[in-house]
Image (tube, rainbow, N blue to C red):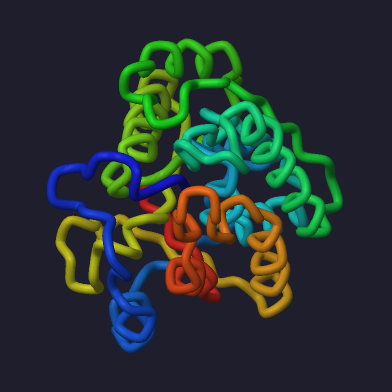
Amino acid sequence: MDTLKHPIVEDRIIHGEGTSLQEWQQSTRLTTLAPLHVTTFFPQHSRICIVAPHPDDEILGCAGLIQQLDAAGYEVVIMAVTNGTASHPESSIYSPEQLNQLRPQETREALQTLGLQQNIQRIGFNIQDGAVAEQREQLMNALRQQLQSKDVLIATFEQDGHPDHEITGQVVKQLAKEQSLPYLQVLIWAWHWANPDDDRIPWHKALKLPLSPQQLQRKAAAAQCFHTQLVADPSTGQAPIISDTTLARLLQPWEVYVHD
């Protein structure tokens, strides 16, 4: 989910505190979205591939869905685009070499925290963090080597506001169409820059996945595993990558996915 040190994407700017949690909660927009029914949308015996630009995106975006898929007996695979090594530039505490080990480990700990019945495989592509656009073909080829005929793909929203998120969403969408695979795109940074009436979000194609209190509690506990993203870096003065405000927006009793 790395942010702020990356360039902005057109007018989807990630800065400041963003749209308040209260504004999202008070809006009727989310109450009118069609529901996402796991066993209806996902074909039986399909493999669900969550393509995460950075370690933490699979949890902050999809931890509720992961729990529901696991409970329903689906196979889930995390395909990690990068290891998030560019999140702390010039840090003497979190060097790229250290982050290359720490951040995937945070994902593994977070998945364990969800209390899943099945083990989830994590496949790392080792694309350079912050440079997914420049390595688009490498990502495309890495995914092609992994995809199977019964896969359902989940990626970040192709207009999510972060370059790595957007390219990941675009590549996954292209491959899904090429191989006639179902896919969804999850909103993550869009909750920051968008608002309930923002027509840059295709609300007419959005599906809302309600989370039970236990599922939300486990998602919140899993999010706390990403220590590198939740604490300030005293060696550079960098604030936490994931602020309390950002985390609160992502820990609502629902997740929203866009379908085609």
